[in-house]
Image 1 (cartoon, rainbow, N blue to C red):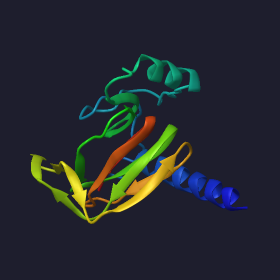
Image 2: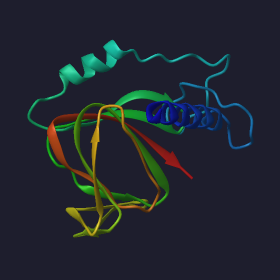
Image 3: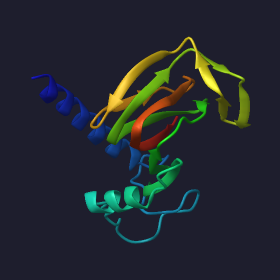
Length: 173
């Protein structure tokens, strides 16, 4: 029963986001497949399909001894769906102007959210990084899990059980 509820909620969230993401700033449908910051191509929107085999091939090409971050799966206007393959700890982060959605494709690890960045540094005009998080909440994550980190919330995946592959999507305001 719990899985049905989680599945239904996931489907509603994905459909809602999909509809919302395909609208331009004026409310009109946005074109698909445009590069970040460029106008949508003329003509009908194109369909993008990333198969399980495509994802498996990307994972197979990922280095076994270091993280492979930011491998693009889909680009839709300003929205980019990326794959991150992690084998080691990564820096803690705060995105001040966007939320971040994670979906665990395979593997397991621990995510820490909330608290305060340790050794905080400004990465750019909208992001902060740190070596770790002090006072956050730890949660085990594994294949099939979804995590939505609101904007302004510190987050980090400090522990990976072997390897962890996640899909990430940044959701600007």
